[in-house]
Length: 178
Image 1 (cartoon, one colour):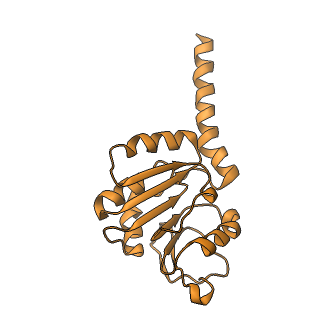
Image 2: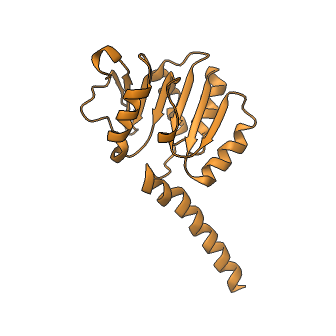
């Protein structure tokens, strides 16, 4: 019986390691966007049918499933955690306009995006800004959760008492990006 409990504790440890530490080592630990903020993000992005929405570090994909259904948009999530990827990949089988990719988002082409949603730790921002600058087309919207890009001026800020702040940037190529 003791070995059964040990096995359960070991599995719990692996799940925690996968969700928190692995993500924290690379870009961010899993901290899902609150459902109450989904429409707030959609409003900030001015989502319209037919748009392509990327979530870098897609987690469990909940925002993707919600936005694709409610706003009739195509959503792509890129997730590094095998457990979160498998969960969201399975769920995406029931959502025609949601695609879940596995791996490091730095390895994916974002050039077709209309909106890129980012909820990551600022330690990745310098490398991420270079990627966004080189790949995104003019007019692409970037939405950051919690922490703004250093030295980039947001187009709009969505603040709400006792809630996360969201920062909107719009790519402007003629002005050397943002």
